[in-house]
Image (cartoon, rainbow, N blue to C red; front, side, top):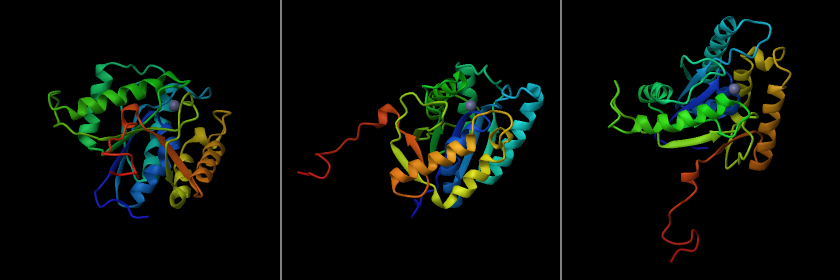
Length: 240
Ligand SMILES: [Zn+2]
């Protein structure tokens, strides 16, 4: 496969440490393995999901695991200071992410689909959309100059299933082992904290998506509604 001559930068905006890695770790690994850049922004650590550990202590562990996963996937890792379950959708959180976008300068932003069982996931999706807009518009004066990330997609996550449509299939066969290794950096995914079989689920999903994409393993994305329309001079394939 030939990758673009243009240098790409994939940014994944993630509600909790671990979300970016499960929903887009294969895509990130594919781009970084081909010489492109990537960054992961975790808006909260996801520190309240461990009944055996105090949230403050587990937050430290999740941040360490996020840095280890970023190292495996070849991505820079950023953290915003919000708390699990308390992520606000307001201009403060949107401008905080806007500033990270202006600093990292991604070409494509990937994030959660909004129709989720988890409020932080739904909120992350809304924050990412507006932060991308704020980052691109020069009239929003911030410390750093504007930056337009013109690609924007939603990722596939078991907690964000309602109405999600797999529209773009990305072959991750060559980096599948790196994808799995990235997930394995988290105790949550190795088992013992949650009864959900994360790694089994995401491995099986990559197989299923690979079957439909005619490759061994794939991850999928969904386009935002404004990207559904494509403008042509005639019916594609039936030019005048
Ligand atoms: Zn999450």
